[in-house]
Length: 147
Picture: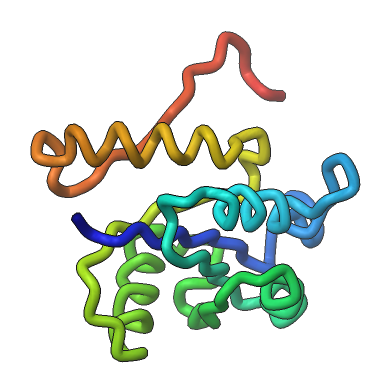
């Protein structure tokens, strides 16, 4: 089975809320909450934060995450997550990592997931990945518009 690597995409240039990914929820930054959930999940081999912000990368390193300095191309508000993941994958392989990996994207703006949630997600994907060889994306329908 491939190793699971979590990647926490945390651009520095949020358009709506200044330094959004460093905002606090119950005394912890959104990035910290994602890192802690990832690090507490025994199925995740490594936790990376991908950012263009030195402030976010320093914060992530302090919290025990590995870092990926995202290119300016993939730090723009119009950059696609697919291009960001491709860039990360090239970076990861350039470090001499030859493992077969699955990338688990943990958006910091969804702070209510736990390590137990991550274990369930990974367990479910491991049991069904042959049906979805290119990956899956989790969504949660809402009953009302967030604004």
